[in-house]
Length: 165
Image (cartoon, rainbow, N blue to C red; front, side):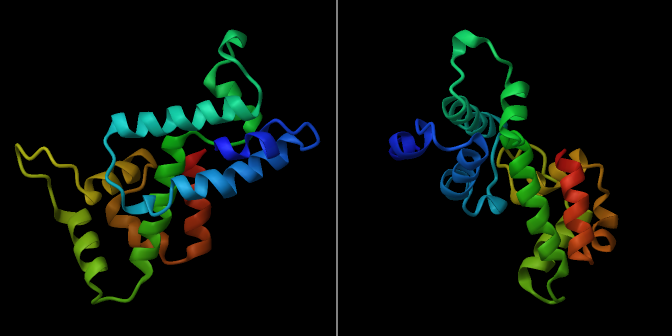
């Protein structure tokens, strides 16, 4: 992010749209590499969201004295917040897992535990299936209906996009 300051962020010849595309391809893609399987607690997601919003404010030249709310910053950037980005990536990956052939270890473990698995009492460790369940619940998707929704990748992508909005 810092190395792009002179070339991109402070370059007045680049439009905001171009700067956002550079941010998405050079910063967000590296930051969120393999984030589909991360098991993040809320405080970790908040830190990622803070980093995301701080970078957007820097790119858009919005200082804290301007007192611009985060929603307006995200609206100017035409990007969702970090919570939505992470959830969207996990749901798209989950659709891919559902579509892979039966008998694969990953599908058997994750899919069966989403339907019937519960977190044992007293266990403090957050697991991938718990994060996936949380994302499905926030997107109003029933885990039982997941397989019927995710069969067609195009319709699943559209459904996930609507959940993220």
